[in-house]
Image 1 (cartoon, each protein chain N blue to C red):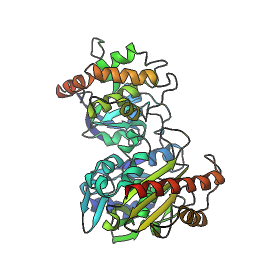
Image 2: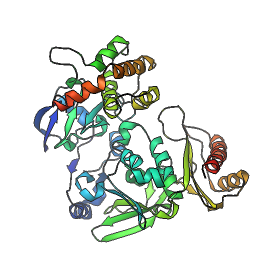
Image 3: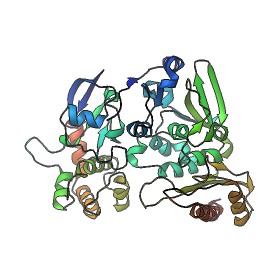
Image 4: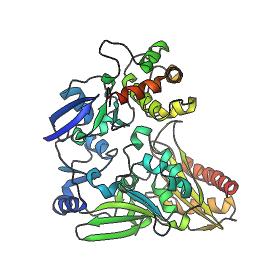
Length: 274
Length: 169
């Protein structure tokens, strides 16, 4: 059973933002609900209102444009994302990570925006979006602001979003379009599971970019590295920046160890694909 | 309360629903459609899988209030009124793909959704198609065989035919 809350489904952005300007701190915004209803059921969140964004047409849009890049609205599901032709063509790392996220049923509801706003250290979309230089667009009744994902996520389940704001969309600039890329995720079982540790990597021309999930409070983005870097150099850089912990899923030593393994595998894979 | 109009297995419904009611509890407790099961209640096990607007979803993580205008398919829409089984259900029966039965309704709905997207899945596609459904009895082997065999026996065509006839969507 879920506690007693009221359900709102605005049909325009203005209606949604006016509601949040009034009721923001007592409201949980959702589209897929695959995180929200889990934390409500567990008694961790107790919003007085839930605001369903799915009635707002522009938030369901996904588009690709050579100048702006990829734009993914708040209500675009992970399955829609991974099947979108421009994602398959230009951003294989997003597809690779999206397909690792939860199960088919959940991916029919879960969204990339939701995954990022939840800001769990083991979220699957944070590290691939960081390597691609993804930006979040925040909307409120007082206007819009935009910031890189690396600034937006500030800690474990913490972001810079204000209670009166929604992330209306995520924009992936065209800079890394066409880069070969991959996402490797360690799980406790062969099937679907939360990530124990994961590495996202892209390679384009002479540059490699790498980000790591579940090895620090936020995804960790390494500085750009030359494609000619040795595996050991990239591993050393990664180890100097992560701060893994021991938890129910594994030890910090195992996390560090697997970061090195995934870096080695991805560098080999991307070198072959480049 | 929220007023919602939807179809359930092809039949029109109109109801007042509690705004904090999950779709799963609405089906089971308010409508008495108890074929859909609650396993974990948190989107992990897939026992509560139903098909909403043509997509498989975990009904424990959907609100009944979201139903307005929706087309819903549940296990109750599968066998005919006289009890005759669909090709898919019959195949589960033949292959002993049911032991305790708790996951079966969700498995059938996921398999139905898979066969709609892919009429002739290979073994790997079947495994991926039921990745979101736990079974703690069978070890999955009989379920995989049942789905593969159902596909060979025209299950996808039967599903398409019934969908066209408005029987279940």
